[in-house]
Length: 300
Length: 337
Image (cartoon, rainbow over all chains, first blue to last red):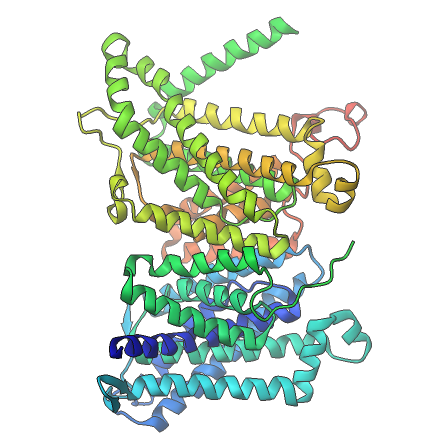
């Protein structure tokens, strides 16, 4: 039982990270109907930024929550800018092009960031500085909760709550929802669609950066190709929850993290990576719109 | 007409033999390897074009079917074919024995991949648009990870085609590989530009209307998918036998994306466009090799810039053909190829 709870806890921590990345996929899909394959690389850049900022500010050696927050904010800012740039340079010129064109540029951007990453950061893995010294903060029976797990889960929850506030309670959020329902109609109603789309990329990329920092904390080995698989899996999580749905991405991410950890713990770790895709297929075949998605009206 | 056809076939055989003999004299191993990779990429791209460009069903898991073809053909050669090849070589000259044997693993790989295509296609093709794309991506990865866990084909170690009995199972006849690819592309072109192929394009243009005209759209989609998987499998089998070693790392979703990029950059609905893009983009990283670390950056920029400047792809849905060289009046309007 304790073992199970321990695995569940690990799963929740991983799931929170997937959820943060998945939110970016789902929001961009919501407003643009675009699968932004470069999103995993934004997450990688987030982790890398955290690495350099922590070293530059001399925060790498000390364990402090304030230091972590500074690094987190810096990475989120850098990635927000990166996300806006990607949208402006690679996707906006293709707004009226056939739907596959932006998908291919997304793949191009993803390749570009991976290779630029290898050039700038070096291809060897780096070790993310221990911004927090791991220690046990809570023990329930045999279940040990570390400060890192707690930070990861808490940060993810706070960011998700903040996003929910932005989307549901602000003018920008309302504009975003309007664009995702019907962009041309929203434009007619005076919503600045281009600005909303840029804003969506900014939000999604900042969340991906946060995920990158949280991964660096709990799993310190980072490298320029680290975004590839988590990016794809977060995308699976977004589909699982219902792509385009924000609560769906959160639940999908958590579920995927938990299931993966349990499969790795109880069955076999070699199937860890396959399970995400098996879930994906099962969901697509039985409920293509995901857990929280709604059936789009079919146009004839 | 018939005599000319026979003459053509004879000329092709002579040309093939000449290419098989001459190319290795002119080019060193490095160039030969690149040439084989280009040919494999051309076949993979044109076969995916059948689904994505002609039937309008967006599939992004093509590397999975290449993997099936590569592994099944490799296993076929190692576990069954080595003996046959040895006994063929005992009675025939080595070159001819190889030539007689080579179609077998290709067929085995192609058939296995088309079976996989059927298994994946029947459930997935109920889905539409992005959901189909995502499902094929997932199936591609599942296939790859499943292979990774089969120990008889090497698992994570990869699978080598050096046979137990010391029979060399590699096949580097560049002319023959080229011929296989050319023949495959020709068959696919005949398929999509024949009357039956109109059904493919009808499904692409408007599924509902096609269904109303009595076209069994689901069957057409599955057909296109199975044929595409067959040729992807052949491409995988060629790759496996030319390289002499296969590993699942060659067939990740990154490879699938690459093939999709060939198709879209070449122009959706253009076999020659896909072939051209596959050739250029496979050669590009090698041509740029002198640039060191910058080459992959330039390569990805090439993809982004091409797409921004020509979102419909290099050739759009037109085909490159010798007909372009003829006077305008003889070309039949609206019938590419």
